[in-house]
Image (cartoon, rainbow, N blue to C red):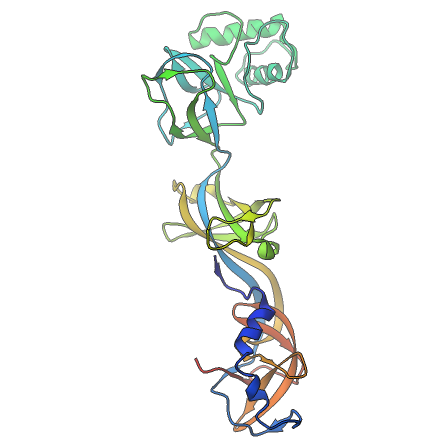
Length: 352
């Protein structure tokens, strides 16, 4: 994770100010804060007015959605497989066993039995909806496999050059939620295929990015958050956080045990992304924006002896310490108010 904001801001402030408390006490014990000449700080920085954005960067992986295995529905010799990277749509061949094509149909449930007249179930309705979408009608798509369904199946089988049995099983079709992209072929042509053994690994056709965020930073990227993605070719593409994992678990870095959630980004214009797969990308996140606020560098803050934080205001050779209220931390700066601060004032910072 490459960060553009201060995480655990108070802890960070205490770290940078640990060596500066002595500066706030140079006037001697009991001397009140206010205008006094205690010597100039090593360097100064201006008080700025503008918008402060709570942002971060995360390392992600560009790929495709909905990865799944397609298992063989028949025993025999694998005689044909699709090309890796190709797309298979409804009624197109997924693979062939003993020269017999297994075709893709759309549906969320598996093809687990041979369907025939008299059968009932959700898989029947899935098949009927596919037949209707392909133009083989004459029935009402429902959960019952009737003689009208059988007649439509026979017409479909004739069009495919198959035997007109009126029955359809796992040796004929496989269901997937939509068109699939072939990620890899798990069984080589010429090898024996066994029912239930993987033949293909597929994905959906939608381009996505997955990345992880610390649980403490997850408010930066809720579902619907707009992000920018820096692609491998140097271009950037806009996207939207489409899902946020509900379970926090340790990340991929063995040296970082902090709990993380996994997020997914969908692209606004997928056609602009290109054909990269499993490629590293950078996700640019922008959270809350504070408009028209005064800010100073985080390292300008001093931990005051009486509690709270302040800054050293430098004017000419005079230095005075003022207490400030803190707001958002982001981009190496912190929102401040109080102490009579105004845009353009100079505040003390450690020497760079």
